[in-house]
Amino acid sequence: MKILLLGKNGQVGWELQRSLAPLGELIALDRHTVDGLCGDLSDLDALRATIRLAKPDVIVNAAAYTAVDKAESETELADRVNSQATQVMAEEAAALGAWLIHYSTDYVFSGQGSTPWRETDAVAPVNHYGASKLAGEQAIVASGCNHLIFRTSWVYGARGNNFAKTMLRLAKDRETLSVIADQVGAPTGADLIADITALAIQKVMRSPELAGIYHLAASGEVSWHGYASYVIDFARRRGEQLVVTEVNPIETTAYPTPARRPLNSRLNTQKLHDNFSLHLPEWQSGVARMLMEILNK
Ligand code: NDP
Image (cartoon, rainbow, N blue to C red; front, side, top):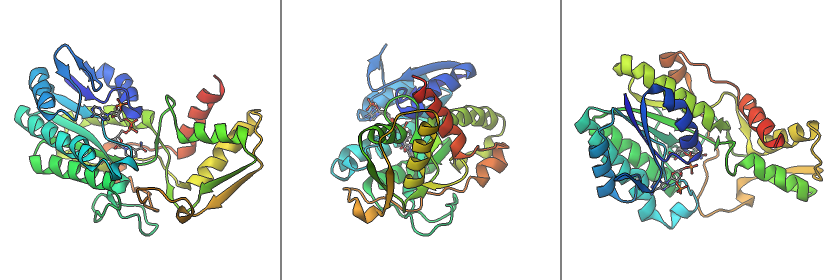
């Protein structure tokens, strides 16, 4: 099996380099050109030519325009990367008879209510990033290519920056922190997403009727405030010297950003669980593991 991975150095892309390697020949690209293969999603012609040259059996697209606030002003670039490039991949996958594995977001939903979103719920993005990701999903479905679309939420990786590292840095500097308490979701490890992707690819190759959209997030739920408090308590128990004494809950309205954020990021993962016989661990187990890696450095 030949796999073309796009976005190899993102949080999820980095972990996919590990989890996809045992499945077959892996061509992993970032936005640069290597051996005539170009992984820049903003260059649609080069992307199309790259897929035709590589002739993969599976395209895994971990690249995306993920700057949620900047997407409000860079709408054209966000659309090209998240929607038009995805359409190119879908068209080429359909022509090759290849699978397209793609990632999307709970930001395709309105964020209203407190019920975890199901795959069949009505979509209504509240910001441009969400709209551009939704357009990417729709292009894939319309193309008729074999696909898996994993909608996920609150992704963190041990590599690079993440929310937990920011909280730990601030907790060493400040006595008081204010963290949003009315947005609720499940912090989901890039490693978990990559592992499930590899398992799902193996399974859909044998059972193509399982193609479709799936919600993929760790189990349980927490607000950003609860997440920050968990991180700080964990670090303190591990002997970290923190100066923070108060972590105050605030509402989203107290922290204005260019892009609106949905309050309800809960995802119902029953379909993934049932169709792929997979167990999704509680969010704390992945976060604790990531914290152990950070704190042991
Ligand atoms: P990252 O932001 O960590 O990685 C995105 C990658 O895309 C980066 O390596 C970036 O490269 C690359 N990229 C951006 N623009 C281009 C381009 N024009 N050409 C080629 N590569 C490009 O994202 P995640 O790994 O966290 O996200 C993976 C997927 O999950 C995405 O589809 C995202 O929309 C989705 N998702 C993410 C969530 C999150 O909380 N992060 C939540 C829900 C869904 P470079 O570093 O060079 O800019």
